[in-house]
Image (cartoon, rainbow, N blue to C red; front, side):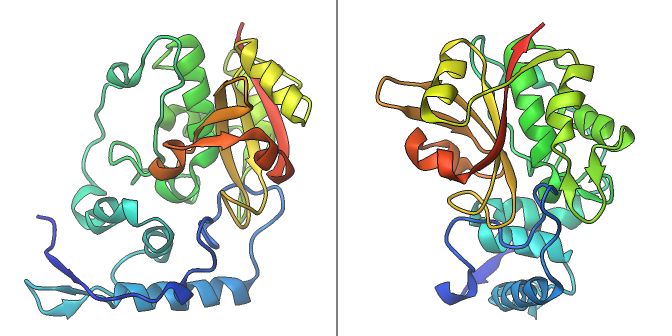
Length: 269
């Protein structure tokens, strides 16, 4: 049963910034954060978790109980609250789900890496909720283009990534998953010019785009998102595998381009 919690006032100073997932690893092209940064982030998350008291036991929910990575996830994304707090109840339960309800013809589905259906499951040496943005982004694109719920099941894509060397221990998902890995799974991968015009042209041609993001609105260290559905003003829809809030917004391509490290366009073969 979900614990009853009392929330005390928190200080915004604990957050490194208002957008990123702090030091949680999202993708590994540029290496992991320094130990000093990780320690500073963890101290902050301990403070936050000590702001919750369990009425049933009268004890504080500290980082000693919950995995550090989940505490940090909750720190930066309060929308993950129920997922994090139900970790001990849900983590060992059998995984069963039907993805067909998530699919709408012609749309890229929004799937969250911290969805309870798969978020507690292992992705290499971490769990999907923490480091699964790469497989999740590729799964969303594959499902949207093909409707193939077997090949592009998020856990299958994560297992495929780990088994084929597309996960870099200590860093996260390799960029190679988005190129070589996507081709191995049956998608056609296309070059996309890193510009407003290039991204808009890809999307208008029916080719959604996966971007590896650098520091900015989506991350401090690295993150994968999906872009699709661009309008005449250059406003684009985003599928962010870790954020409902950011997915619910339209984004100006001109503001996103400087934050993108590398990108890929996709179509069904």
